[in-house]
Length: 94
Length: 149
Image: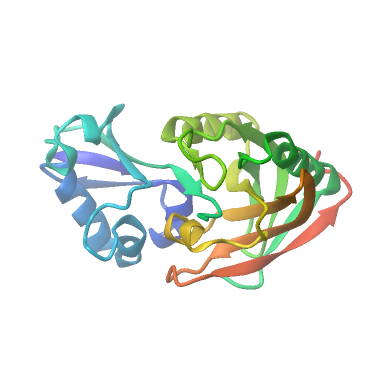
């Protein structure tokens, strides 16, 4: 399926400064893999060392959070827009 | 990502500090709106936000994706970008914790204000290294005003 992946501002320097990338992908996992294959520097910012999407990386298909769909197995259709949206967290941690 | 400079007015720094005092002993948070070029960036406005970490607001903060999108919308309306985030460290130094580093995005400026006994102390800015190994301090350059929109 031909989909568009929207890249958030802080990751654009690692993706050729592009706001979005078009690619063929059948589900979200394939779309993200396609993205990190094309732009290897993105991988460490999207995934933790154990290969899971980082907790502050949110992925939407059109306007739906994939956590409420089929997560990374969420199927994609032609024309879908996959958005990577940051959440911001931190603190003293003490 | 060392050697970068964050240009911000004293008035905006005071607003960040006042937000940290207002929410003390809990952490405050908000967005930094402004412009970026390769070596320096300038903050022109703040978007104070609610700390969504209701379970542990004394030592954690969280900005939800919805609040991030709201801040980005405001930035687009002003024809600028979200270039970073601020938060407070109640009773702790204005340097990133390991928890901060684990949750950080690259590129953004992270301004931290230390607040002790309801008084603002140091205010510093940090940027995550490309390899996520650590933060580098960012020079804060005081500018007369931030109304260069």
